[in-house]
Image 1 (cartoon, rainbow, N blue to C red):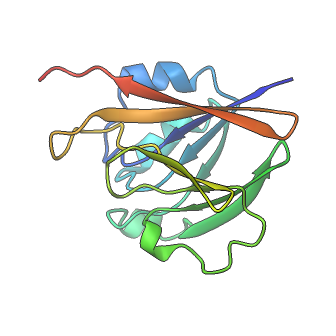
Image 2: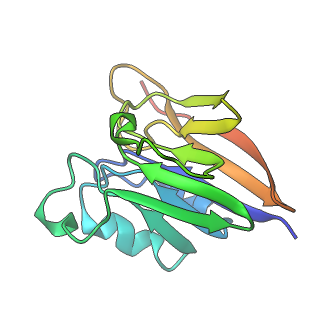
Length: 153
């Protein structure tokens, strides 16, 4: 059976209804940091299992959140951090590195490992798209879909 993973980052205090609707159909949610308000996580927790890292804009309320996480979902090994510059030198056997911070969608296989930034699904910054990703995992293999959230100019 396939597992659906919603991957978001940089909500900056805004959880768009369109994003929430997509996440409702997911089995797991990954948030790459810059959440900005605990209410965002409160809204996500009832939907699915959640993995979250602290971003540079997550202040005192987020002190308990990890800066980096390593975990597995259905046999796929993940490493997650907010800023790519803070990636551990030794990624061990991580197959997917999830990060945020730049607000720009990035999906590239480098040295046999997927590097994925879902972009920002909060407020549009720098005139960029509002994006997220949905990963489907089945039998230890994954497929990623970039999702562009339409916004008013």
